[in-house]
Length: 79
Image (cartoon, rainbow, N blue to C red):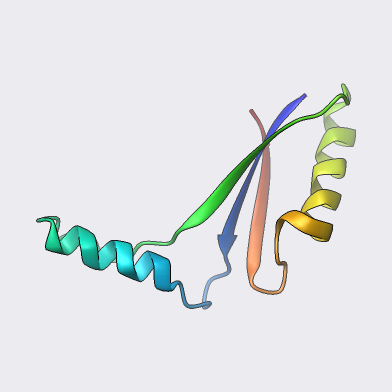
């Protein structure tokens, strides 16, 4: 089963990469961008066929390795 994990900084956590992208977009002639939040997307292809079990396994992966849950949130969806 293919899953897509999206990891983003939590609201309120400063995002210096997002700020740099917003500034660069303004410099390139895109002045209407108020905010940019940068994250990462990880695609997993698991042997698991049960959707609930696959999502639970992906959540464990996020909690243990993929996301820093102190400052990041994650979302799991079927790809």
